[in-house]
Image (cartoon, rainbow, N blue to C red):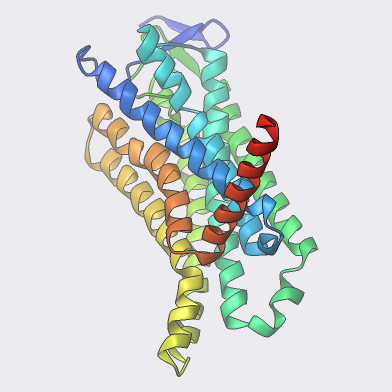
Length: 317
């Protein structure tokens, strides 16, 4: 096959989830609805935390950052997919494809880092409650957030630079709804051994270390909860970390499911459908998980609604 350097590659073709034209309106409506729910839910979480001074604590600061990251994570892929369905034009330029890879990896990795930081926060709150405010001081919280962003940027930049060294064949069809890194590498005509090595090693390392930290934190948390003598005390302690544990389970569970499906099945379209859970559904569910059983968030929502209603009244006047 004819080979071209990446500087000559103009565009990729995103084949999407289905080529059936009859299904496209249904996909457009479904993903538009999920995207709007994701934006609304996560924006409400952020506004509620900002507007309520009682929620200006490390746990909720990390939660607001997670909500912001989820918005960005979903916005990296879904709007382009909706545009492609609406215009029936599945083209994405090489530059935009690289940009999408960078942002997708960046916000996905920040999600992982924030879930790890939040697990450490819950570990300190439950296992060392008397020293919580001393340990989780504003300086440490800022450093943890800065480190999350810094390592995520460097990792994302590394993966994109590895893609830029490749040459691509003339057939540039990606059987996915966005420029997924592994699918793009498969289109290369040049040797991809180094890319595969870096991708799997770095992904494994940056997935294993956070997961190990989360499991260690929760092993200590569960051990501390079991030592509490009263049932009410156990329930109260568990309720402070139940939402986070649910999100961690969904995040890593679906991520592992996508990885296993891509390993077991050679059908790229099936892998793309599996990725929907990881890239679209989880960011949509996070606000519901954190708000349904959280009294502080519910109270903040009531205050936010009151503030917005007052502003609406004065704007009418």
